[in-house]
Amino acid sequence: MTTVHDSAVTAVTDDLTVWPATTIETRSGDTAVGGVPLAELADRFGTPVYVLDEAEVRDRCRTYRDAFPDAEVLYAAKAFLCRAMIHWMDQEGLGLDVCSAGELELAVTAGFPADRIVLHGNAKSPRDLETALRLGVGRIVIDSPAEIARLAAAVGPRGHQEVMVRVVPGISAGGHEKIRTGTEDQKFGLSISDGYAQHAIARILDQPQLRLTGLHCHLGSQITSVKPYVAAVRRMVGLMSRLRDQYGLVLPELDLGGGHGIAYRPVERSLDLTALARKIRAELGAACAAAGLPVPRLIIEPGRAIAGPAGIALYRVLAVKRTGLRTYVAVDGGMSDNPRPALYGVRYAPRLVGRRTTDDRTRVTVVGRHCEAGDVLAADVELPADVRPGDLLAVPVAGAYHLSMASGYNLVGRPPVVAVRDGRARLLVRRESLDDIRSRDVGV
Ligand SMILES: *Cc1c(COP(=O)(O)O)cnc(C)c1O
Image 1 (tube, rainbow, N blue to C red):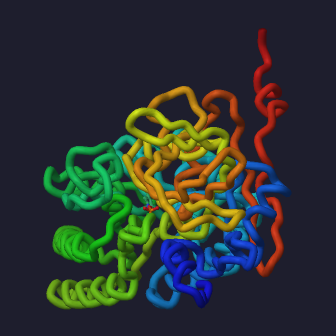
Image 2 (image 1 turned 180 degrees about the horizontal axis):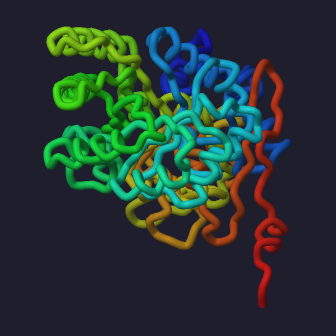
């Protein structure tokens, strides 16, 4: 974080708390990340552009490794994946959690060891399973009864595959209804309470080519309290203990999924990873001791908390319009590169970058360029009153679930991704061009 010397600047830099640690305010009033001023990136790569701070990604990986030294940490690829991310995860000693043949194949062809990859999915296609077996994926997480026989048949009588079972612990947690996956009434997993989980486990044990290594649960996403995780440990160990009693089965692994919440705005708080690690370890130790079980090896799967705070979306202001009630600031991206506000009603704290501004702030609504009234990036936020077309707006905490959920809406084309590190910028993913779009359009 930058050190600031005069109070007028302090007021503005306060909102850098959710930015990458390398963020500073430059002498000319620009904001620099990874040693590169954002206006320079906009000039060089055009806008909109997504900026990824490599040091921030790596720091976050190390924070996990330090907080959970005995656990296996898998990065949830769906948050954001490209070959550079895959290399960074490999170098930082993380595994990967994927949920499609595409994510899996990109990772393995980029050199990521397949045995450190776990395949998820509530509806795995034949191609997903075929790819997983062909590439030798480490574990497959079974999510439905039908998958058991299908997978056993695909593995073949002489084959061998390690699997886990996704269990619904019956715990409600997560930042929005659409991302709560630990409760009964949603599509993921097999429930403990209605016995489907136990039933699926019995069927897996009947398949000699499938080796059950552990139970898996994923409560949801954007969870900011440790309590639901502690409750999940208790329920999962409860099931492990019943499995031991019933089948003499002692499972060596327990996967608690991801969902660790982060702050998108300075007023929000993130999940405390040190407290999470401490409380999970304590609960796991106590519950296993009470049940007379050995402590299983813990697996966790953070996605958002690794990629989210390392990314910045950089837009150019195209129009500023005052209506009776509001001032609209329209930028050159929107719901096609970031569908999260429309999907979950999330809020962001955009920042004017690239030039010095007056300290007068005014309430505006930042909107995208797409043909929907719901294409709102940030409603009712404070920006300098002199915001005008040509300005640059940066949205921090844009590294997860933006580009991985990007769409082709309005044929705008998906933005490029640029990595910054030690004062240098390099293109990781190029902008989607009209030629890209045209080349898929093969019929008349
Ligand atoms: C989405 C998902 C994750 C990662 O969730 P985050 O909120 O990004 O940490 C981990 N595991 C599974 C099974 C998931 O579906």
